[in-house]
Image (cartoon, rainbow, N blue to C red; front, top):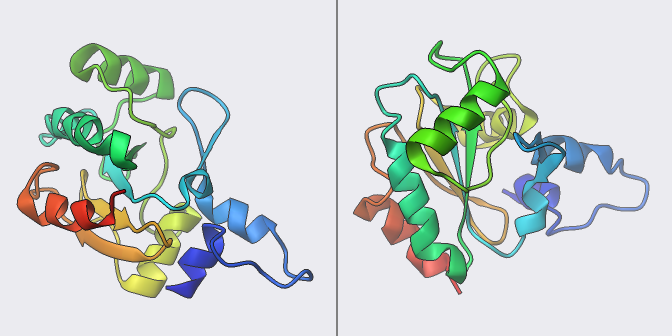
Length: 175
């Protein structure tokens, strides 16, 4: 748990430690260009969701946006991480962005298409797997990171974004 807090910048490293490790683990490429760094939301709960446009669970984009709209003023951040690891994502970042904007009108932060499992998994997901045994088993798996940078909980695809198990974990973490 301390390592995730360290990587989110909540704990400082001794001066000799490489800072690249923190950025490598918390930074994602943004679908809008530039980067999204989870460390920018330190002190806030962050729900990270691996998504796929052609998945039968894609309707959850509406629920994710509704969750974000409901709690963002109180500090919640919802980050969508499109992935083709389960072979259900569109073939380009531009296609994913257009699909999500046209079909779901989402404005939550979104990364570029990113690996979430296996050897090629983004360092954030590798760390979750190594330290907490959490690895997405399908699209629309959700992981909640607390304001302190610690793993709080993870849910599978069938747990809806506005369900009691998720909101019950989020609400106590809000301002």
